[in-house]
Length: 90
Image 1 (cartoon, rainbow, N blue to C red):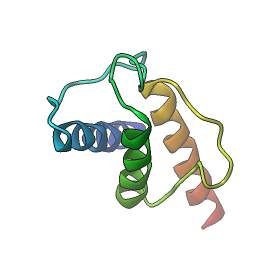
Image 2 (cartoon, rainbow, N blue to C red; image 1 turned 180 degrees about the horizontal axis):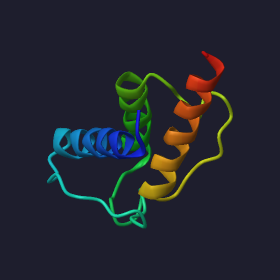
Image 3 (tube, rainbow, N blue to C red; image 1 turned 90 degrees about the vertical axis):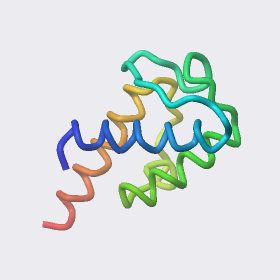
């Protein structure tokens, strides 16, 4: 999966969290903060992680990944986790 694919999937899942709670979908920039400019709370973050695991098939936080603050960091974390998972399955 390419980084662009991961970015799209992460964006889609965040927008699903937003719209499911009555907020508008939007586009994200790398520097957007999850709890600041995007406006996710702790429950939203939990739902986001579950949604990302369903969409991408991995949960880097279960393996001990450090928390991330921005959209870009979240995408990078999932790209790295997927790269590592693909590398270990070869």
